[in-house]
Length: 82
Image (cartoon, rainbow, N blue to C red; front, side, top):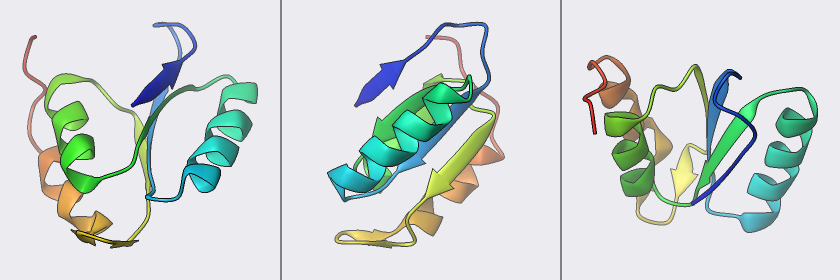
């Protein structure tokens, strides 16, 4: 998992199994002032969503272990305190 920027910025979670896609998305969003969290699996994305407030999610629908859409249900749940 890779995160950069400060806590005062809007946070975007980027889920993609391809490192090059995550890197480009992270760079573009970071330059536009977003805090970016990059993950490579749906399971890692769900872990982030359970503990971290996220303002937006960019996800790959086709992942080796399933669909990126599997992470959408945790978006409707409240964030728990760590």
